[in-house]
Image 1 (spheres, helix red, strand yellow):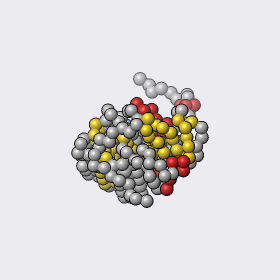
Image 2 (cartoon, rainbow, N blue to C red):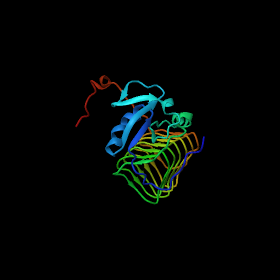
Image 3 (tube, one colour):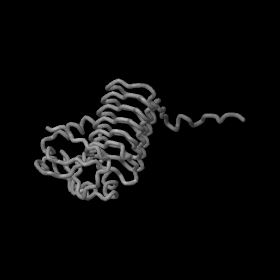
Image 4 (cartoon, rainbow, N blue to C red):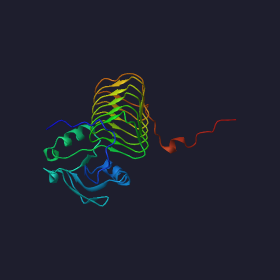
Length: 225
């Protein structure tokens, strides 16, 4: 398989007909967003097709074997996404990047193929890797580099001069401080603030929330005035 192509232009036009690869949760999330931005989802392909997805036919991945179609990889689990991307049936697909119209992407940025910049996001002079997803309300600072197959969930903020490796997942509300390097295959939990480098394959977790039954609080006396 040839390595994925990169493009130096962040302003890839919305293509008229797109095949969604993957019929899971994220395909449901993105269907209406893509259509509102002017794309037409012709159909969806998945290893386990079942009925319709939001009115679109779901076929097998092998059904597109040999076809030269514009496709979008909806799968955000990095390990699964990379394996699906290497499927021989998808070898002839084109993988344009998609930038939602109300996001702000600097012309000094480099957006690689198959990537997605979601609504209300800001990307300065950064490099966004192959098949990387910025979901919504993400801010990517100057000279940041985001590795291939990385998912950045809503409201996560990446400061200037940050380096994020391949196959990472940055959860909702996380903040990565300026100059930090995140190794490959790292996971950062919701609302975590990362102020120092993370080695490859490590996890940054938020403080655990304690959940108790409401009945445990019954009968507790109110504080005296």
